[in-house]
Length: 85
Image (cartoon, rainbow, N blue to C red):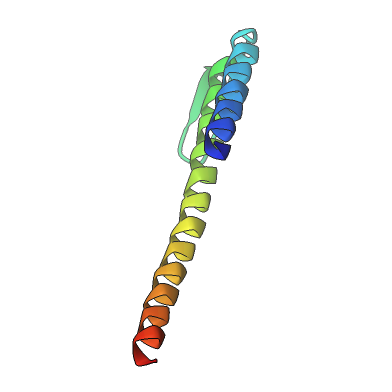
């Protein structure tokens, strides 16, 4: 249930960001490490939001995986301890 509520909040925030971004049609020059581009502000907002979400998910995934590894090792140690007794 908590996951569904979190997902709905994220989808709502993404929709809100895209709605706000679609109202900004001005073109800006963007300088990044490799090149330079002319982008609409709405496109720039969408790209920035998507990159931020992806980075956040990757950080969350690494944290989750490390916790799963710890849980697995703890469960195996618990099984060994129970078999010895």
